Length: 170
Image 1 (cartoon, one colour):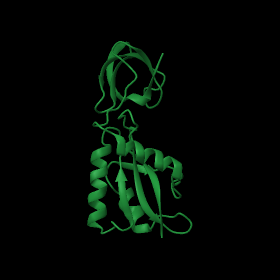
Image 2 (cartoon, one colour):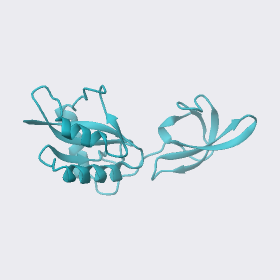
Image 3 (cartoon, helix red, strand yellow):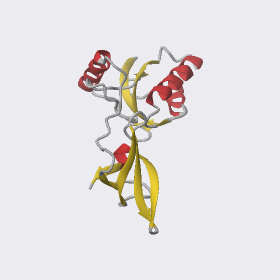
Image 4 (cartoon, helix red, strand yellow):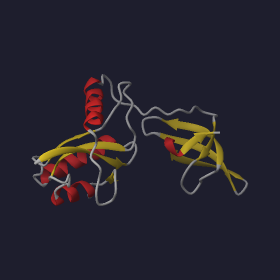
């Protein structure tokens, strides 16, 4: 059988721990011959792609993942879903895999999430229960990719912590 690479959505800031959990589950289910590699993709500037890991797994002639591997991956704590549709994840293109693998092999330092905000910046929440709320950045946790934002709710300043990609500059 051929092998293809797939991208998985995972909890931001937990990419490495989710990768380790998945590798342990693959080993426990004796799937190392099917699910051969799991990596956290990084750019040359040692920036993590927050919320994603890549997995190389065996596929059949129609690029379907074997059922046992599919469920082992999907049931790993911290993994949201494969990119693509719920029932048919889309494998990565070969040139995408080559570029990301080259970047991962070249990394010289531990990856960090690049957060494009600084304290005091005005921002707007893009998604979630506070969507379209305006506020300002109170604190940044780049290691976890989190931004603490002060928004006004019912006339009171309230601190909320969000993943950095959920806010945009105003």
